[in-house]
Every structure is written in structure tokens, then in C-alpha cells.
Image (cartoon, rainbow, N blue to C red):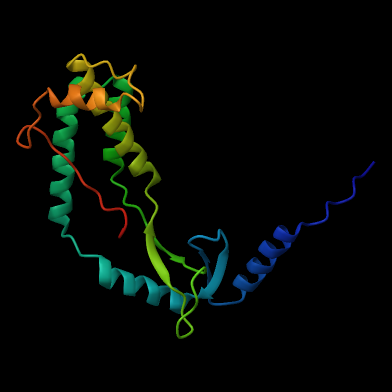
Length: 188
């Protein structure tokens, strides 16, 4: 016995409508910032938004500079190999060897009013794999430092976070003996 075809949902109809409009237009689909919607804008406007943000927030890097950053990352990875399991080393090396750069994209701030017929926008770079690798390596590095110095972090909770701080302060970590990285994710 044949089943009746499912009636398309409102969302399915909306997606189909957008796809039909895109097929015969110069529009592009752009995600929104806060409202979890999409908007159609002209490709020309999308390019304008991207170029405005890049002019304001980006700077060019020469190939040699990028290669130097990669060499430094490889050097740090070599130093870390002593402290990492084979799986963690493979994970780190895979991230380095991919040499992939995340693609920037525009998000429309549709929760804000349009000005002069233009949306407020922000340039966003989705770096899920990159940040995943960083957080995992950061956690592993911290765990290794604490293990090496026999600091029991597994019994420390938010209530006893001061105990962890006191134990770490006894290590006499100085600026000259450590590397710290500050990433300003607000303007990226």
C-alpha cells in the first residue's frame, strides 16, 4: 500500500522558496547574527560588506611570514611531543599539516535596524577545528604541567579553586620561562 506523501512543513516551503529565488537571481544566502535566520542579499552587497570589514580589520601577510609561523608551530610541536601520547601527537600534527585557513563570512545583524538601506554586519571566521585543537592542546599542556609538579587537580572544585591557584603559584612560573597567548576573539 502506498503512503501519502508528507505535506511539506512551513520551513521546507521556505527553504524551497529561497532555492527557487536563488536559482534565477544574483542573491546570496547570509546567516544572521543572533536570530538564527537567513537573509537574501545581492551578491554585490555581500562583496561590499566583506571588503569593508577586511579594509577595517585585516592586514596582509607575506608568504614568508606565514611559513615562519608554521615553522615556529612545528618547533613548538616538537617540544610538546615529549608530553603527549601518540594519539594526541597525531591530532596535533594533523592540524599542523592541514595548513588550512578558515574562510571568513559575513553575518547580518538583523536584530538591529537597517541604516540607509544597509544591514549592520560583522565578519566572522568559524574556526571550529582550529579552536578545538587549541583548547585540547591547552588542556593537555596544563594537565602535563600539573602532573609533572604532582598537583592534584582532580579533587579541586570551584569552591577550592584557590587551592589550585596557591599550588600553581608555588611553581614560581615567570614570564621568561613560559609562553602565553592572548587571542582577542571579539574583533575576529
